[in-house]
Image 1 (cartoon, rainbow, N blue to C red):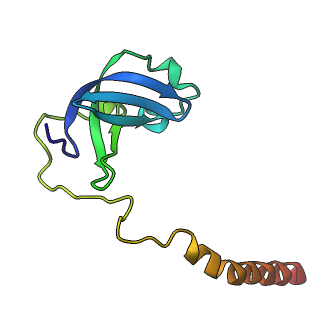
Image 2 (image 1 turned 90 degrees about the vertical axis):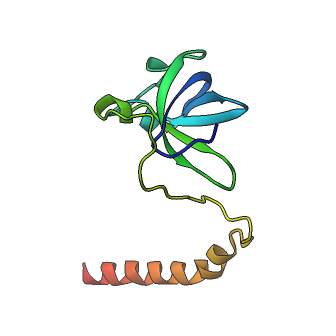
Length: 129
C-alpha cells in the first residue's frame, strides 16, 4: 500500500522511547510519532498517552522519499477531521540527499569566521556598556 502525506492510517505501537513512539503500519513499514505529535500541549511523559501494542489512528505528516521514514501525528486528529482521501497537492520531501556527501565540511570551513564575528560582537557590546 503506497502511503501519502495527509493520509489517515491505523497501526500498532511497537516501541516507546522518551522522544516518541514507533508504529507498525504493516508490510514491514514503520513510522514514528514524535512526542510533540502525540497530544496538543506539553507532554511530560509519552507513557501517559501511549502504550506498547496499542492500536492507534494516525495521520501521515511527512515521508522521506530517500530513507522511507514516515512521520506520524495523533495530535492532528484532536481538532481536525481527515478523510481517507489524500490531499490535492502532494510534495516530496528529502531529509537527506544521497548524491551529496559533504558531511560537516561547510561547518568546519566557516567555524573560525563565526567565532571571530561572535568575539567582535561581544567586545563591541562590552565596550558600549
